[in-house]
View 1 (cartoon, helix red, strand yellow):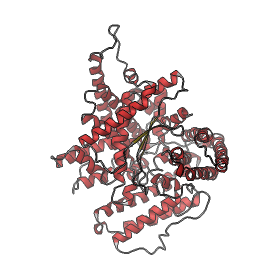
View 2 (view 1 turned 45 degrees about the horizontal axis):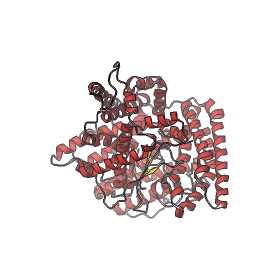
View 3 (view 1 turned 30 degrees about the vertical axis):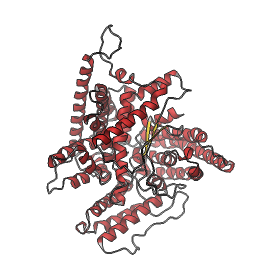
View 4 (view 1 turned 180 degrees about the horizontal axis):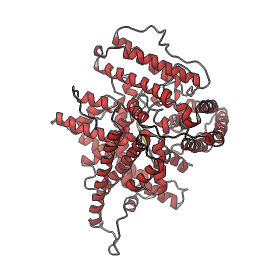
Length: 628
């Protein structure tokens, strides 16, 4: 089951609108969710909130902004308990979001009223941290209005509902509490059961909302993707969870089994409805069009670059990575074979895939290899002072991945608003299971080969981990919970190369080659997204792009093309890396005596904000230079 689950997590969608919307608070993986007003979860109860039209609010600008921020966060957490779990808000783990049409309409009205109030505040009367909060609060409102009004995601995209349900469970099991911490286990299991019981009512709302939309608004590809994700979530709820969650309390065990059964039946019903009812009526396209694509980037990422200019930047990045890749292949081809390698035999063209994939650990050594590599990466970062290090923060814990989680590696970082400041980051590594066949073991080891493992560790430990740790120290509430994809994923992509450029594993040509393979794929995704969503390219055309430029076979290329179609913000990785590299060059030119580590500390100090805001903060100027 874990293998099938991994395929869902890594090989299908990057989440459609929700992975671009749910668990990220303010950002644009990945951006953000429509925050709804003070309504409760899908059981229909009332929750706390602030009526902006009636509330007595301060007049002094700083106090007024603080009150508006607090009211907005409270309203969002009241509407989206699933988001609250991700943030570590400490309540609402037993509830789900209210997605009734009237609740969504209230949210749009709330965002509109809040936006008017925020814009009326004079930013000149705010201190620098509050100016950031003022800007972020406007962006939250603008994004909500765009997604609920123009995109109408809940009427057009069935994937958002399945992603919400999957995420609501994932956030309750991802840190391993349900299997490792007996003191909290009972409460966590009760919350899981409660959310499972609410699956049916949320999926009923999904059907109502999707029926209310026009057939031209729902795409065939989106419905098929939602059906696939529904089947995978059904398997997880019906097979994996029951095996992973076995409480000693008989009454709680009976409650969990009943809740799992009801949720499984609700997912079966929804999957059947998708294929039998919605699919025959789906006649829409997933392409946003140039105007919507540009607005999606503006409201999510703060980026106002024209699609045509983005395409030029991504084409250049793709060419440069391809050139470096080909140069490395030539260097490796003429390098002497390793000591002990077999000599002689006909020399054919270098098989790059085999070269990298066959360089892996033995089955019983994979987790140990990952732990050794992780500690080496962290030690290098600390010795070279590449990132700010909080000596008081708990050390990273590396664990074998439990059956209810998925992915090759899984980094779980402290939650932004969690009260426990001593929560340790966790890195789960998916080891080789004894019951697998030899073929399954070999496939797993080839996928998690040495260089792939190193790149992923750099991505998580040099990229995501410092972001999460620094965000908790950001000066404002909205800055703490911000998670702009072009910063979060862009910095992690940037960190992969930055680590190696700083001297880690110096001279390892195969590691360099793996870096370029990753960069080529991400640049191809970004270029494909711009061409498909803004410049009129068809799905077949971007499929061919992945074949021609990324070297994928037809099936892999089609899968990547469908991912791009479902998630326009796959541009985030490449866009963010390019913007950070340019900012680094410009910042170091303005600070010639500064170290690379000082740049990274400055970059991370304000939270995962939109990159134009970070650039403005680091390089204030009357005439700011371009982002790219």
